[in-house]
Length: 134
Image (cartoon, rainbow, N blue to C red):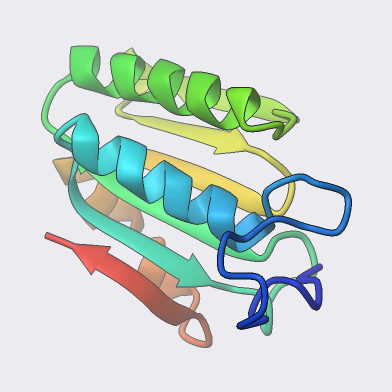
């Protein structure tokens, strides 16, 4: 899934040969949006070596159902404006979690209690942590 342009020093802007953002650049954009919208404990995990369905997980915590819904919408809008195609969205503000699947980048937003309960990062011990913002 990761392309040669992903980690290529001659491609510092994360743009693929087709002119789209690479999966790493999209994941970093998701981290930036989550940080700007005051999510907490934001992690970007490289799962490309242990997963056949995605390259990156972005995991973030929020403190209210309202913030969860707003962050999910803001992330969808930002990534779609950058050329990413949303494949699906599951969950909702009242459930305490939302997952937004952009193919190579999967974004997980949890309430604090739900994140502790599901321990998603712990379920992928072979993943490499790329970014962590607490």
